Length: 163
Image (cartoon, rainbow, N blue to C red; front, side, top):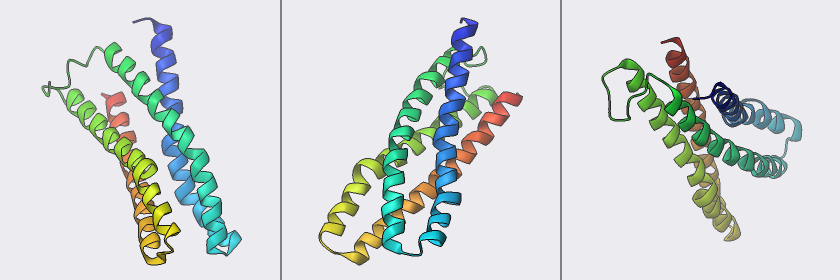
């Protein structure tokens, strides 16, 4: 495959990874704790996080599509890749698990955005504070799971690059 196509695919893949996983990292470990400390009001923190979440979701969605397209391009260009069903090499095993973990991350991301957020809105509309709080906690827990899975993907990538 042409050097420029592969190079551009690597650039886009890395950039989309930084935006998605870096955004999760930044939100969980910097923005959320900082907003809780600075704002000292749960409703204000919630309003800020909702605004940040809406803005970040569009970037994450775009990053996911870029990761899929660039990832398939890079997979096709890689001479070590034979097929998704070939587990004869460590490299093929690791790429399988990397793709599987990314697929779980994508499912969690879209579940939160398309289904869970609607449940939270409906619950909040019906003034069921206990249920709404539980759903919000579950949503935050899913973001934490995606951060852990994202770190696992980065570890898999490091091993793939090293092999």
